[in-house]
Image (cartoon, rainbow, N blue to C red; front, side, top):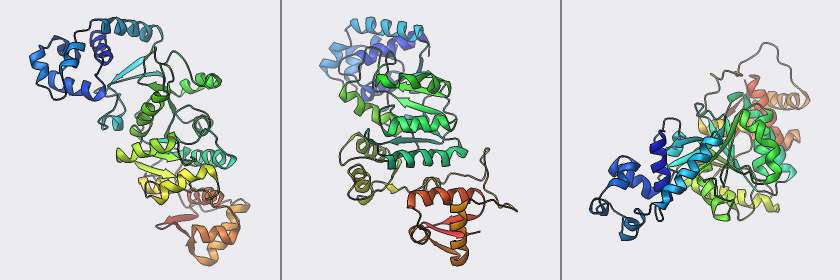
Amino acid sequence: MLQQDLLHTLALLKVEGIGDVTAKKLLTHLGSPEEIFKAKPSQLAKIDGIGSATLKNLKDKEVFKFAENEIKFIQQQNIQTLYYQDALYPEKLKQCYDAPVLLFTSGDINLDNRKIISIVGTRQVTPYGIDFCKNFIADLAFLNPIIVSGFAYGVDIVAHQSAMENNLQTIGVLAHGLNQIYPKNHKKYMVKMEQNGGFMTEFWSISNPDRENFVKRNRIVAGMSEATVVIESAEKGGSLLTANMANEYDRDVFAVPGRITDKYSQGCNWLVKMNKAQTLTNASDLIYHLNWDIKNSSKRAIQKQLFVTLDDQEQLVYDYLQKKGKDHLDIIALHTELPVFKLSSVLLGMELKGVVRPLPGKDFEII
């Protein structure tokens, strides 16, 4: 983006009463941010939603001082700016009516890979949630997805760490400017994240992590991804807001079920109960519902091998299915005495070895 265009875009976004939706409406009618400031009041007044207060605020030249200061920060910190009409702007986020006009990024973000999923959940993550998150991302790693989350405590940071452990690109969407990091304890992860992924925000360097910013941040997390995965959530929380936003954007939503007595499974169970999310018990659930092509994966291909080595748990499942031919996930778990979340991981491993294949309705059969 040319500096002059960036200056006028930043200034436009600083005008009181003009948010992303109104800014895009003005840009659609007048073509460029500079033309908006040059336009006559009578011309602007014809645009739906532009009243006398907005016309008055557009005359405020102070907005250009704020814009100039922000450009200095962008240049000094080597920040990349993504305009909503740029080719590099997240493709799915472009489709959201309230997507940010500008995004600021740092690191080495490459969105050419369209397998982008968001993982969200409680900040009070339990061992159950941690184990599921780690296994889930490890089982998806051969498809090289981009893992998006909010860089907060709990599920967010587990997702980012797990992505890095599996050499996957990961993006932290922040609720503040790129001049700081929140929470401060997570500064230790910044360098590694920026080496393969990085950070994204719509907020300026003068923005602090205020409460309302986290809600705004969540729409980017939901909007830029093909699917949103809720791993653990209480009855109320930001994760449920993100899931609702994803539903509004017509994105797939998945929720990890848990016991009805577990506080941090209540939100996930509610999403499934209200048909606001698909039940997620393993990576293959997501692969199946998103119709991801795993046959053409460059990292690993599912193929029938002449000689297959199975570990003890895989052998246990194999022996059972060899007798039954096929059976439902829950019934296999019952007879093999394996927890469903663990069995799901075992079955995916066997699927990748070409030993079993999933069928509709969570059935599995020997190949």
